[in-house]
Length: 61
Image 1 (cartoon, helix red, strand yellow):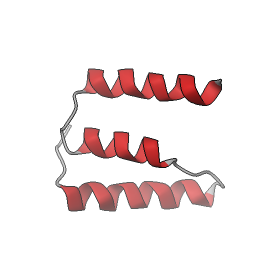
Image 2: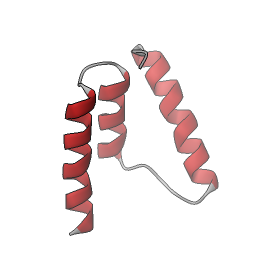
Image 3: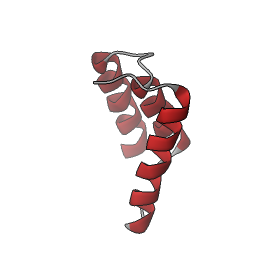
């Protein structure tokens, strides 16, 4: 996957948030931060998946 700079990551995330909003969904700040870390190459795919799973566990409790 291509690494994004901060500006590109922010733009991509804003587009995704707008698409979700059309469906009446939102993206919590914790998930936004995780996505930015992955988009900018600050974490690996494996780290992203582990962290996403941890977030999902917290939400489902």
